[in-house]
View (cartoon, helix red, strand yellow):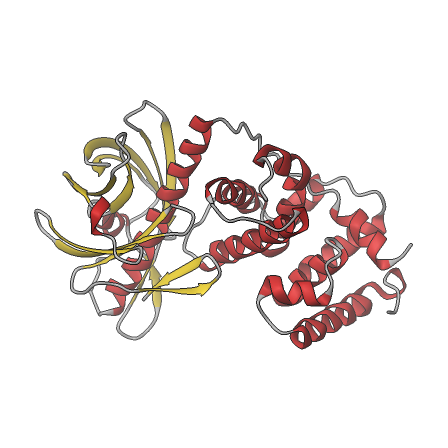
Length: 159
Length: 208
C-alpha cells in the first residue's frame, strides 16, 4: 500500500524530527533529515504492508540519514544545544530536566530509549529498525534507564 | 505520571519548522539540493583519501570570501564562496533556472604522521573545480557532469553501477556512479582507480 506523502507529513513530521534530533542534537540537521526522509518516501517505489510499516520505515530512514550526517564532513552553523533547549516550551522543570538528561546519554542508548518511550515500539521492533539483536536492544535500554535513574533520581521511576 | 508519559511530554516540545509544499517543482528542487549535498560530502571524503596518500599542502589561509567561476552542470557559473579557518566552506550561486542555491561542506587533510588539519581555501577550490555531478536532464537522460563535459551515461549501467573514465583539462578521473533504489545517485571519483560501493545499512551505500 501507499499513502499520500502529504498525509504522512502531517501525521509524522514531528516524530521524524524528534527521532532525527535525538541523533543529531541539532535543529538544522534534524530539519534536513525531515525533508530528505519524506523526499525519499516520495521517490521510492517500495510497497508497504500498512501504515505502521510506513511509520517504522520513515523512522528507520530518518535515523540512518541522521547517523550519516553525524559521520560526514557536512557542517552547518550550528545552534548550541543549550541555546536551542532554552527556546523550547517545557510544561514543567522536570520534563526539561528529563530532556536534558536524555540528550546527555550516549547515542546508542539515546536512540533506543527514544524509540521505546516516545514511539512505543517494542524491543523486537526496535531491533528490526536498528538491525541488531533483541538482546542488544534490551542491554542498551537497561543501561539507558539506569543512567536516567542515576541522574534524575525520583523524577524517573524504577522499572 | 509514568516514565513513558513524562518522556512524551518532554519530547512533544520538538516541532519541525519545515514548511512543506509538495508540488512537483518543489520536490525536484529538494532532490537537486540533496544531490548537491551528496556532492559536497563526496568532495570532502575524496580529499581525505588524497590527503591520506601523503600529499603536501600549503599553510592554512582562511576566513575570506571569494567569487570564482566553477563548472556547475556543465556551465561556467559565478560562485561566491565563504571560507572559515576550520576547513569549511559555504557557497551561493544561481542555477540555470535562476534559483538561488546554497551548498557547503568541508574536509580535512591527513598528514604523513596521521594528524588531521583543516583544508585551506585553495585546496577546497582546487577540489571543487574538479567536482563531478550526476542528474537527469530535461529529456530524462542521466548525465554526468565534469568541468565543461556533459556525458550521457543512461545506457552505461549494469546492476545499477556505472564506471566512466573522464579526461579533463588537467586531471583525468575514474568515476563510479551508483543508481540508488529510490532513483537518486551517489558517486565517487579517484584519479587512479574506480571506487566501489557496498550497502553498509539499508539505503546507505559507502564508497571504498
